[in-house]
Length: 325
Ligand code: NAD
Ligand code: AKB
Image (cartoon, rainbow, N blue to C red; front, side):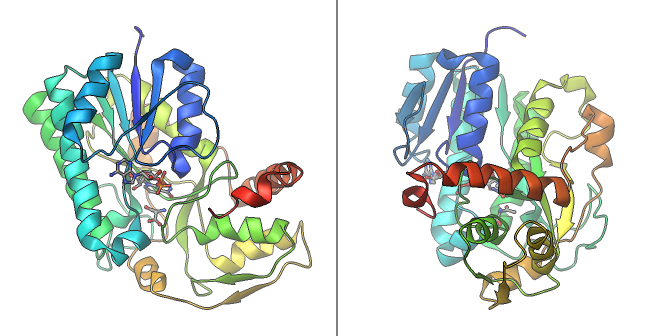
């Protein structure tokens, strides 16, 4: 692998915070440029540029300044935020992606990572063991932009030879960073409440099963996909990637094994309808066969790890100030 210089957009988000660190460990501190429309909450050891992905001029300037060779494009509005402002979600998710793809083309960038989501599926999609190629009729603006983003990435691969790769991430669970306005956010929030000794009110009903994944598996899968030889990839848009699937009462029961006094109640809101349009679990055999995908964490091992890491963070005096910002 030659020297790569990587630009990460949306780097202050749930994934970007963790992925930027992982990329710095692989490629070196000087070769990863984090960027976001907001300033980072904590100090970053490495480069950071303030960047709105809708500003194509500044995007091109940053790419040229650092001689960027790869982009991990994470800047987006997620499902719940997107339903509150669908026009902005379309603009950021579609115009932002278009600017990235065009800037890549103009500056000779070789590889792009652009994540998709389980939000590409809709109510008519089979919910169990959902196939890689299936009915894609998303019911949220977020899902519509993710589906169009998959198609656009595929188009740039075949039309311009730009190596665009992607994953249909399930809901991601992390202790290092907070989620940014999705339907699966409850599965992170529940851990913070449990470890703080608080009651948890779930905005999804009992029985709402969704595909989920621990962040360390998501990072592993992302890096493995980006390092896989292009000739091994049968899909140039977004791979189904599975790890676990659970409903709110199942994760609560797992937490109660560590914190028996933990309690949960249910007060579904608009996110219930979004969750009901998604699938329960997916067939990820393409990812397993093409580039060896194999997740490490299930619900039990993830819960152990989340609780033990959150307890360590709780001892840090700044923890309560940074929660839920
Ligand atoms: P997030 O909401 O936590 O972070 C997104 C970041 O984008 C934020 O830091 C925000 O400030 C930034 N941003 C928003 N508008 C911007 C703009 N105009 N210019 C530059 N930055 C801007 O999201 P995330 O969970 O880290 O998700 C990253 C990507 O992964 C998204 O494409 C998302 O659709 C996808 N994804 C995430 C999950 C998940 O569970 N976290 C699941 C499926 C797919
Ligand atoms: C969301 O809930 O919007 C995201 C996702 C699954 O894409 N976490």
